[in-house]
Amino acid sequence: MNLSLNKKYNFDIDASVNSYAGELALPYVTAALLGAETIAKGRCRFIEGIVGNTVISGLATTDTLQAANCGWNDGSNVALTEQVLDPSDLAVMEEICRGTMYPTWIAANGRMERNGDLPVAWTDFLLGAVAERTGTSLEASIWSGLSDGAVAPATLMVGFLGTLGTVTEASIDASACSDFVEATTTGAAWDNTNILANLSTIFDSASAIPGILSKPGVGFYVSYEAYAFFLQAIAAQSTGAGFNQSLEGANYLGYPVYPTAGIPNTVDVAVFTYPDNLVVGANSYTADISAQLIPTYQYDGSDNVRISMRFALGVQTGVAADGVVGFLFT
Image (cartoon, rainbow, N blue to C red):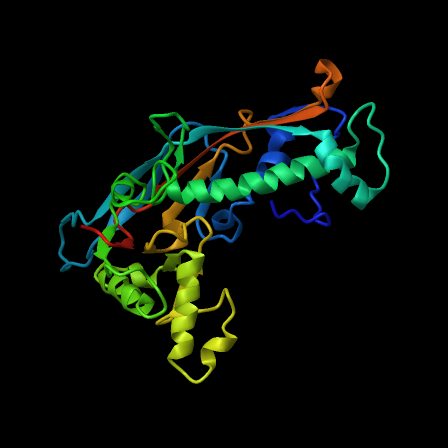
């Protein structure tokens, strides 16, 4: 885990209390949710405070103009669309031995007594570390889905591209983006020699979707490896312009290319859509979230501390067909 000892987590909670629910648990759960890059960078529509299945409503319109007359002629060109976001109940349950953390803690903060209640700063440090790692896991789950971990795994959470923590053709067909247009990309592994051709294939399919190219923020969501290939490719197209590209600044034909941590480097896949169409919902700001820090060393003779968080999260698309998935479909 890449943990900065200088990172500050401002939880503003009395750490002498070890169990938090509802509003008191919010800072801990929020820290974990905002650890997911897609949420933190505003590359989705993040809805908080959901309770159970949530309907995402929109309007689908076609040409609304007609000849004027003295009567009423309903054009029937405006319709309500509905997508249902079904959140999954998720939990964090970790046990950490204080002895393994003391050397790191003491090096940064000085001597600490092993007896008595956990100091506020120690609690902050511990919960911050777990929240950071949980955010990384959530980012992966938002895109690849999440398995229940059983021998015969079942889907615990559906992602934008996967259902069991992996991205395959079958998982894409069962994912939140299953109704997106499918663009079949090259059979060769993506690299800096074919990434532009693959993005072109995806863009060709996107240009046939009415209105999508004018949506705010519309662009390509790709893995960090695919993004690196893209930077190398555009650098090779000119005399040095690509060498000064910011890791966040490159675009294809004026449309941003978003490096996305949740899209695995091991899969050649890309999504073309806009942030408002990728909906992530969580039950933060409700009474149903909780966070606990349990000093089990006080009760069982061990040197352990347990950390528990409980919340719900789910993903869905706002408009089912407003996007393209580029993949080697068969």
